[in-house]
Image (cartoon, rainbow, N blue to C red; front, side, top):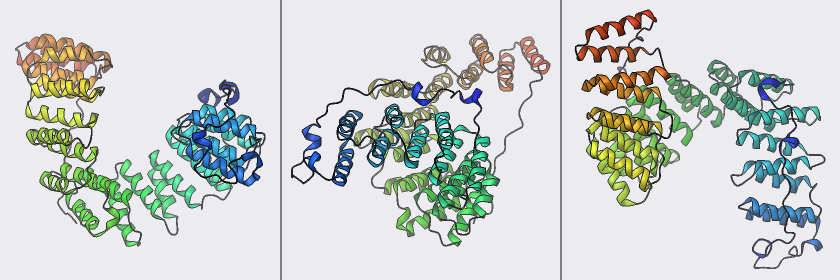
Length: 506
């Protein structure tokens, strides 16, 4: 049995006492647009129909619900006809509230607490619902209640809880669940095993995830996808590509998920030839010809420096989505093709097929930055905020500060930071500090440095930038003071970075 630390989870109160809502005054007659149909059937007059027919009628009504208000009316009818303890019907109602996007978890809690003897499906659905809305400790509180009442857990229970453990980042809870799974003999269940692999991978315990995978006599497609994704998410890209090859050798055909994750590993490694080989595989297999795979291939070609290949693929794709446009715009921008990136953005607006989002404008601002296009940067920043009503993120502000700062508009960049509705981070202040040093604005540089000190007081690059700025302006005494302050505080430069090239492609 899992014991959750009460000081951390703070779930001493029962769910019922936490959720203080009452059922609304239900309308007891279902509106005609829900209850009626064009054809009369034997169950149109529900009170006279059979019990099974009533259940089926309720199922059809649930399918017509699109809002909680619709659900309220169906629930009123359920209560009126005495189905409020029917686990099958109530299970569908709770599933709507807990799992569907239109649902309301608080409503599900109230309905659940009124059921005299909920079955395992209802308990599992509630646990799943709390996971969906990220009320993770409540899911484990419900699991504890489930055990206390002697309700049998099954593969679905543990799959939901393992996923929640990964979301919590708690290896302790994950291992405790693993022990319970072993005790109940559910570790060989494919669904549970795959979720265990995913949880350990998400928590960066790749060795355990790999051991669990290797123990499987005949891994299915989901297992392969899960273990490959685990290695990619942990930065073990070579191992991920090796697993992909093993998968093909075992006779399991990859799907969209496999190919997207594998291509992302090629992007991270700069493994252009492997990426091209995967592309040739996609060309020969209809299963991988999806927009998500094509987008990942464009991204791979761009990140590996094969911009023309990326452009060629972009031009041949039909049914482009906003991700396709974003990937190509960003690929061109990062390689300094500012004009082409901005032209592509103009084409996107002219075609009116996809509406640009925050990522689109991040690529556009990146293009303006690389091309030194200050006026265009200002124009597109205003277009984003005023015409498309997109709230700028720190990345957008950082790009705009860099555009202004590089062009010498350091005071304007400083005022932009001061006007930000969100708290500025050290990276943006450091960007402005670097441009102050570039343009020799020592006075503003000192002000910016004070802001950086409030956030990250002992970052080596800040001392170096300030010292170099003093040196450039001939203020040697100030430079020596900064250097000595750095030594006195024990601040050291980080190890130099590394780069690599693919020498022996497959």
